[in-house]
Image (cartoon, rainbow, N blue to C red; front, side, top):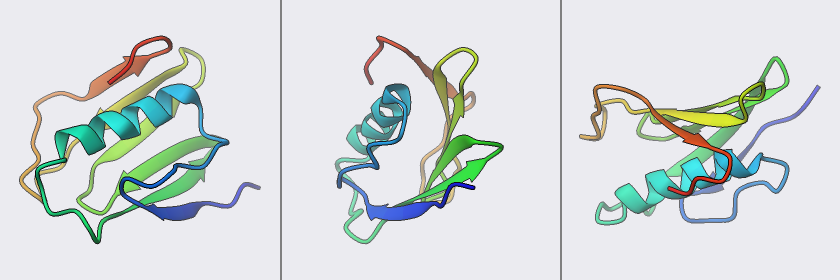
Length: 94
């Protein structure tokens, strides 16, 4: 069993996350840079041994270990919308 954690947006994500997930986190933070996110936090949970990272606005990043990719789905809760999820692959940066 793996325990999750929370950390402040802009803070250092847990080192045990795959690099593509960290890249996806940084890409979301860059997109939201102009917003007041001082109180927003990321939540890491584990589903079937894979990390699932959720931001307080409802943005969710899921890891596909078979393809070593991270998929970001945006909710409209904080005015962040997108028609299709973004996917970041190994070697690709935000």
